[in-house]
Figure 1 (cartoon, rainbow, N blue to C red):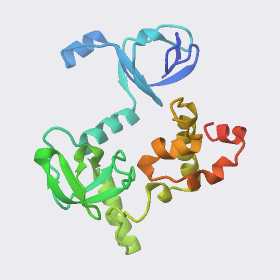
Figure 2 (figure 1 turned 90 degrees about the horizontal axis):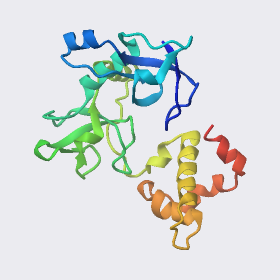
Figure 3 (figure 1 turned 135 degrees about the vertical axis):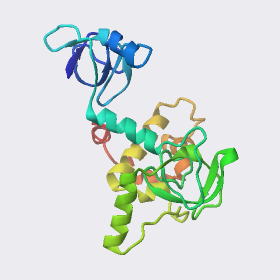
Figure 4 (figure 1 turned 120 degrees about the horizontal axis):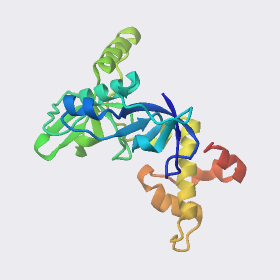
Length: 237
């Protein structure tokens, strides 16, 4: 279902066309099925929930009083419920988890790791190749599909997937050139906008503050330091 935004917000543009991912706009049905009602909708590619009154259909009419959810939204919710680590979730030694956020400079988002030690009382684990404790909330469980794909991949290739942290390599050295440059440009721009550089150059401050998580050096910025501003801006298009 495509709609137009009726107003400008931090994330929305007035008159811009958006596609609805989920909508709850049927009060009677919601009260009957859930016992409560909150009119809201979400949009594909845009974070957050919004009031249906902030949108119109393409013909200018109000949104219908319906409850509807796209198959993609249903799948994401099912996947979240299946893989999320929260509450009293138990993580055992030998479990294979997927990194959600890079709380350590050696973790790679989306990579699988094997649990080598678990302290559920303190919500922390260790993984193969790394002797420091890490928060379990930096990870999620593998979905059934991901487990099948991992088993099939190992069977077909005859090579077991690396499930450990390699402390010999920096995170940034594991990225392809495009992703690496995008990360460096973002760090560089943040340094450029920071007025509290304490007399340091933009690159020096980028290494000192913005790049400390990734163990960056000034040499890492050598290639993009020679690029023209237009070329740098194009990397964000």
